[in-house]
Image (cartoon, rainbow, N blue to C red; front, side):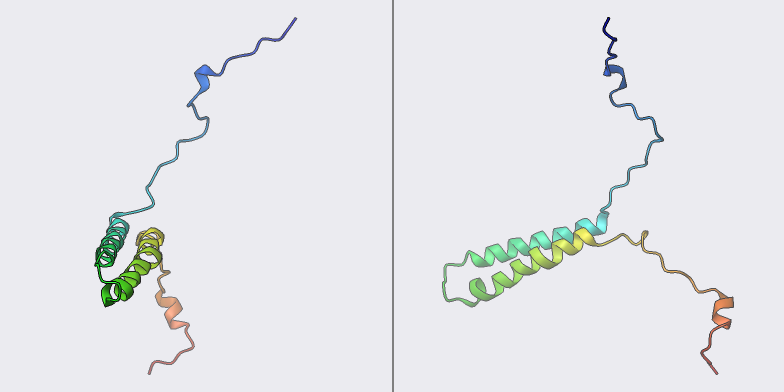
Amino acid sequence: MQPKVRSKKGQIGKSKGPKREFSFPLEKENFMIIGAGIVLLIIGYFLMNENSVNGFLPTVVSPVLLVAGYCIVIPYGILKKPKSEISIPAETSAEAQASNVKTS
């Protein structure tokens, strides 16, 4: 006699643990920075489109804008943490009084 195998059709999508709250890691400020980087890239490619080979804009300014957009602005927009996650420990009055620094 072979043992019966239960199908898992009824168990798909069911989690046994508590539901986790989903929060998107990027906020409006992050998207604004990424958008500024994309605008910088568009300006860089537009300046590169100039037909002059020896011109200052297509050979100097355009590559600088593209490198700044790809390597600085867009990664900064992705990696920047929201202000709500950054916490600075507040100094209490007892800690301020126990300091070794003389103020008067």
